[in-house]
Structures are given as structure tokens and as C-alpha cells.
Length: 625
Image (cartoon, rainbow, N blue to C red; front, side, top):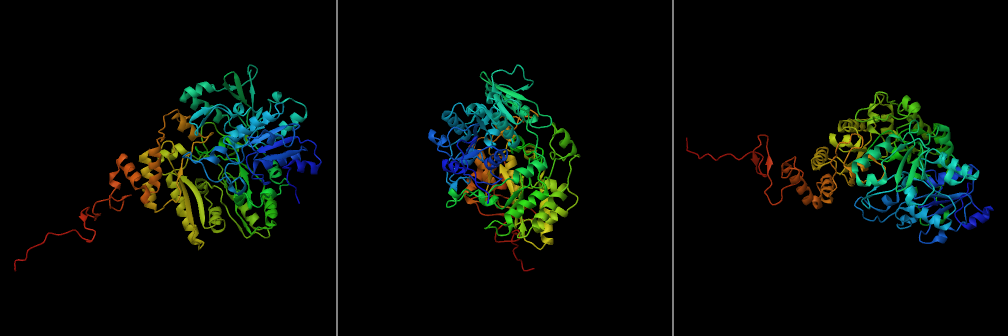
């Protein structure tokens, strides 16, 4: 049986370690599974011959918590965890959440706000001469000056705020391996400035060929400058053509080396087939870790996404080039899962950021990188886009044939517009018949052409066509299955006019969302840049941004217009949008007009009593004739 990585001084003693090479500090509970970033980094370093210890959710107010393993020989590796600590802690309304799915028992409060920065500073206080390297989603998306929604201000690079020596951005297996070998070779951390996928600090850039971003001070004062700086970062976020870029804060420069090259299929297979125990650490077994429930019987088949949704940070973190595992590797993982003691026969998911992307978008992307001036799928699909589900279909079928597996489900995001581009419906029909557990979740996000363009999403007609096909194939399979669409309120570009348009669509389709998703401005997305600056960073055109709390509440309420609790907000929204025609008792009205007698309309547009089916006729006095 595979062993867990050490989590205590006693574990080090049992292994005979007098000193570990790296202490891995994480804001998550330690789950030794390839879906948890710190477990992956720990196993990668172990494979390279380095010793590691996991410091999970340390007490950030006690310096001794960071000294419990002693002085690491090579460095501290720090992450907030699988999730941004601020998103983990706060709703879009900035209210404190009550549950942390990545902590034992879902307990909230086991990590600090802005955990990466807090942990980094504590590591430096513990041993100021030990290198501190930060990484993970929180660090990756904050590597330059960025808008912080929670404090409503632009903050400098997290590399500066955390007191760290290096920052690893994106998926860091290769970068962290190179750093480890460089440190082990005796190279001082201040001289490790040559590794792809990393950022470092310096006082002098005179000898470096790079693109200079507008300074932190400038982007704080000028929102157009902020948008320009964001665009410059975005277009250099490709391993094939990305250049070195730098930004100045006071007298210090943060320099970003070009992105790390995507892992090959063989390299990705190796990462996911390291000797994980695939379990939560025994110290949490009584409480459990809620996040494990969805991933323990799931298989990660790919990473990266060329979907190009404006509100998604994947482009900044994993990049636009899709990297896929081999079918053989996923089958081997399925065989391991099938032998787990509590496995019931169902694989919960086979996918990734976008499940039905199985490789680079086109031949050009594979050789030259992603295009600088366009997206692959919107506003119209690129003619060079390779549309093919054969490989993914074969993977699903191969996993389903493993002994002990009854069903294979797909719960990761699916690009329905990509499915509709495939003239061969074999995959779609197989998906509907075999891989949907009653409900299929997809994300059209909106219906307004204007808003969808801003979002980087396909037009509503594509979703409608997909829904019709899904229902047709479900009926053909003899199954009652439903699509659960996600819609978003208050995205940049969405005024009350567009919010009402979405409400009318929900009325016409009969869909009543149980939960409402409000746009959440998080670092590293095009949408957040629009939200803060008010400009589209690629066209520099002004974008309407709903920031007023009352308007945001109105947009949310319109998505659930039929709820009595939302009546006053919906009414106010309709009046403000000059859509009083939707207030009343007609079939197309969203809400009734309280205090008035209900009235309906017949074909001739004449008012009729609710008790009568025909218009009143004038009485004719009988004359006896």
C-alpha cells in the first residue's frame, strides 16, 4: 500500500529523515489525490529524489507552527490550496461563507484571508534565509498588479506582498522540478531567474530583453492603463510565442519569464500515475473532507482550455493549449478506482476544465501557439478548428469496459457549441444515452447578443439547438433527462434591458432557476478587467458595468421573477427599464399588478372579465317583433 507523505515530526522520525528538503505549506486539508495541487507537487518532488513534508493548515498566528519540521534544506513551497482563499471565504456579496469544503468537516476559519501572502511572510519570519516559493491558483492570478474586489482597490504583485523569492504560475510540475534541482546544485535563489513559468524580483532590468508593462502606480491611477497592462499580459500568456514581461512597483521590478511548455501526453500520464494513496489523511477520517466526495471516483483526463470565456481565469492559469492524457493511462486509473473499498461501480466524472476538448484547437496552435487576435469559438468558430469527439468517446467506452465499473458519467463542463459543430452525432447520442445521470449541466450564461459577445459565449440559438437535440436523443433512448442551464446576472455589458431579456427567455422556456449566479470579479479574468476599468481591454471601447448593489439585486431578482419575495425588486426593475408592459395579468407579464382587478386579453385585444370567455355585448331590449 502507498504511504502518505510526512505530516508531522514523528513521521519524519519514522522515515529516518533528519532534515527535509522542502516543507510544503497548504491551506487545504492534506488529501493525497492527483486533484489536489500540493499532493501532485509533493509526489513529483519525491519522484525526483527530494524529501518533503506537508504542513497543512498551520496556525498562522504562531511562528512555531512553521518551525515544527525544522529548517528545510532547500525551501518552503507555499499555496493557499486548490481554491482562492478569498473566493473560498466570501460570497459575491462579500458575506462570510459558513463552509470550507477543503477543510476537515467543512469547518470554516482554518486558513487566513489571502493565505498565500500570510503563509509566505510567516515562513520568512521562521527562517529568513530559506527560499520561499509561492504557487497555486491564488499566486498565479496575482502575479502582477491586480484589482482586488474585496478591498475594491488595485494591489501590487503577490510576489511582493508575500515576501516570497519566486512565484510559480500556471501548472508548475516542470518549473518546481527545475527550481529544486537548481537549489540542490547550490544556486542561490536570487540567481534563479531563468526558469519558464516563474516570476522573480529585481532592481535592474537593463540587461533583459522584455516587454515593460505600465507601472503599478500608473495602473492604480489610470484605468485605461490598467486595461492596457492586462491585455499585454494576456497576449503573452502562450508558451510558443510569449515574451518576458515586467512591471515596476516603487523601485522593484517583478519579471515574468515566458510560460512553461505544456506537458506532453507521456508527461501528463506520469504525473497522474504517481503513487498517490487517493485518500484523505487518516487524521481527518472521522470528520471527513467534503471536497473529496466529488473527486475520489473521478478521472482528470485533460488540462487547459481554448474556450475563451471572459469570466474564466483558466487562460491565465492553465493556458489555451489543451493537454490530454492517453486513453491507456485513464483506463489504468479506472482500474485502481474500481478496487477501492467503498467504490459502488460509478465513475463520477471523466473530464477537466472542458471535458470534450481532447487536444490543441488546431494544427497551428500545436506548432505556433494560440492566435493573438482571435478566440477559437467566438464570435464565430475558427475555420481551422478541429472538431472531433472520437478520441474522447473511445476513452469513455474504454473506461466503461473495466471490470467492476457499471456507469461512467460526465459532470465536467461541456462546450455545447463545440458539440453542435460536430456533424457526426455519434458522441452526442452516446453521451445522452450512457453518460448523463438524469441531468446535464451546461452554461449558456445569458441570451442577449450584446452580453454573450462580452462574455465570449456562443449566441443563444446555438444553445436552443443543443437543447432540442438533447431532448430528441433522450426521448430516443427512452429516458426522462433534463438540461440544467447556468445563467449569470450583472456581467459587464449587462444593463437592466438585457436582464429583462433574460427574464423573458426564462418565462418563455418555462425554466425556473433554483440558484442564481451573480458575476464574481476575481483576479486574472477579462471580465474583471472590464468590471474595474470599464473598458474592453482588446478594443478599448467602453463597457457598461452594473456595480450599484440595488441594480445587481434587481438583475438577480429578474432571474427569479416568480418568487413573491422578489416582487418589489422586479417591479422596480421593470419600471426603470421602461417595461411596464410586463406588469399586469396578461400571459406575457412577469408579475401581476397588485391591487387591480385581474384582466386578460382576447385575440381582438379587447379586455375581458376573468369570469367570461367572450367580450361583453351590449344588451338588446326586446321589442316583441
